Length: 156
Image (cartoon, rainbow, N blue to C red; front, side, top):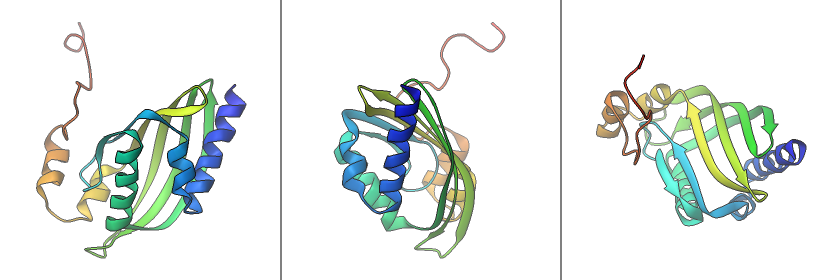
């Protein structure tokens, strides 16, 4: 299963890099959840294909990806981790950022069920300039519908 999951996700990145967003969207479950914390205008939590289509349009509206490399795809059953790097330009400001990133996916029935995007969100948000969303990103949650940690206090 791990090998199939790895190949499936690798093909989706190839499709994305080729500009074939329909293939990427088709690979998602109807209730797909994407969580991309950070202060950029396109960050946040998205649910379903329609919101993901909106995410991709917002991403294109705000950022020109100058280079995106997938360095590694690691799979264990239906959990797939993709490690990469990107260099991009914020269209409105002309400022550039470079950041490594990690995307963590859970598959269900051979389709994407959840995704989590991790990157240097401060480096990205700072290229947009000072904004309310950037301040929120640096000082607290960006509308996450659930606690990041659950349970008691640390050390309990």
